[in-house]
Image 1 (cartoon, one colour):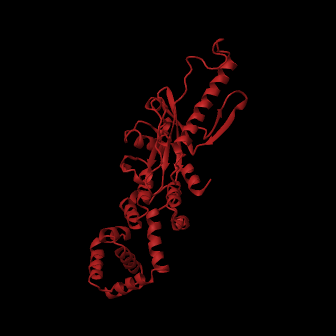
Image 2 (cartoon, rainbow, N blue to C red; image 1 turned 135 degrees about the vertical axis):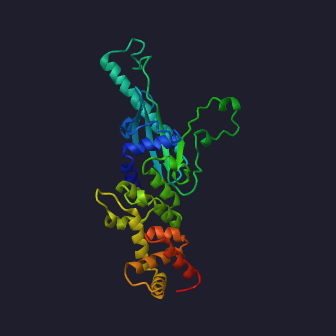
Length: 337
């Protein structure tokens, strides 16, 4: 498994997030599924295809599988994580779901034969008339930057050129469910840190927007769960976030992502943005600001000014009065260095 796969697998082990995802995506934010309704399932599904001596075993490993309880019943919901478009996804998901049904069928057959519940008519198939299977379906979480342009159903993959309409009407379709993480506009439906994870990933292509989103939600990002931080750094391929994580670990194991980004901005200026650094220092001296923490504030503010952040965003990130930052912005705008 790759770094992203491991990070996502660990992240969605949390029942609260699993329930939150189901509620936001399927129930439009209504709190129908609770964490206590989520029961772990086996991610390895074994299915059999064929007949008599020509059985072929199919083993599928789902990224995550949970049983979701509704009253006295339950369904089985799997998650598949995709970074790239898979143009055969309807067939892949159909086989995984079918393997899940086949596994249930074979379990019923074993139970019925062991308990000798079968009539003479039922014995060959091993299934009683009243036996029922639990519903299985899969949600594909797609993290790619471009919109999903792969097939959304089996029907879209079929070459039906010249096939009579009567035949087409008899073909069974298989529709798949794709949640495009970077284009999911209803992140306000989330009640867990899925809101922060999805929101940051959506803005990751624009570093300024990602930073702005982080500081606008500082109360939640300054105490971000480690597995949420790991998902963000893995999916955004940010080596910098990964490298600074331990420096910003708080009590209880949570990560202060706001401070991590502040530190990255400051260190980036010290390491490579020499022009901005010198300009910031000169500005601080010209304004009569003593060296030290205030000088660092000027450097950070100038860095954000150069990248198009507002004075309000810069003040919020640095933690100083907005009027002071506005004064610096006016001087920089007038060419004072």
